[in-house]
Length: 414
Image (cartoon, rainbow, N blue to C red; front, side, top):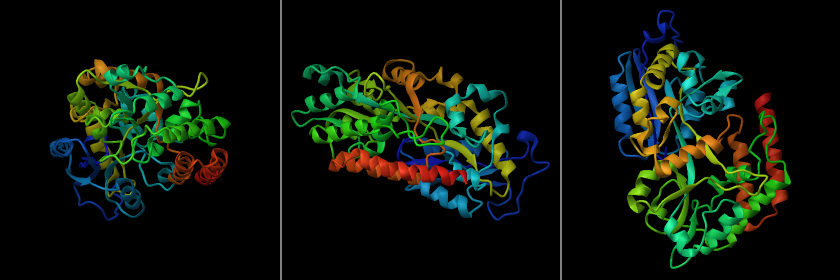
């Protein structure tokens, strides 16, 4: 879900899972007895906060206090896990550091027979050293939205290669309308991984033990972002950033890279004049792609009652399928994390929504692997920014980013 996020907090009770008897009360300071604190980031969609508070209020196993966290949620979680027993439950994407430092509790025993109903790719993304640390809540992805009428008027076919995207961006720029919006940083934040995937590369190798972009094709892919910047058709300085559909809805651009969650607002504005595409391939050796991300429900290993927190997570994100379905599709468009719910999701059964489901199935790639660290990500993003905006030498910039990535991988394994 979007830029503003929220989390749910619930209290977990002993009964579910039969864990209360033995208990796991650590004796550490944290939530009051019988109370669980559940953190969410501040989701941007109307109604999400009310819904998660309603879910929490319905839980009979404990009192659940939901905290909605505007601003830099991810940093807040990192700080909390280092120093506090609060929150008991939170949403995030697992990081290897948290596992190594024993900050999060394994959740393998929560899924039971429901395990096969969850998208395996999502479960794999929340697994470290063979243990599961997050229960996926919903699936977010990003796609290339376009206005078919504007492309037809310009004689432009929907782009299926990166060169075609560069060409379309240039040719669709006319009459005060720019060709493409991919964020006010010119696509550095959201197109770095898709550009690697377009060339058949990745952030990390398949086993996560090496950087996945030590290849000359990485420089070629990021050189295409430089071409987009030089072409004059890229919108910069929009009133809102890539996660908001404003630039596309308001007719400032013919194409925008943004989230599936914006589909209801976009179709409300443009009706049937909406098409969606995955990020195109660089060439025949590359591949189309869409990023797949999923906040998962996690348990703070320092919680005063880990078992109660786990019971609550199981109740909400494994047992309460109606809540899960509403959470995914009731407030903007998201893919449910479970096969059985995805098949019933009405907004995704036809039109662009159905197309996006096909993209995720055919070419979805994990956007934030557990072994890809924040420092490695910053080094690569800085390199891509200099390549795209300043025309810096791509080979040299990527060599420096590779060095940081290797250091980070080695650090995680120490």
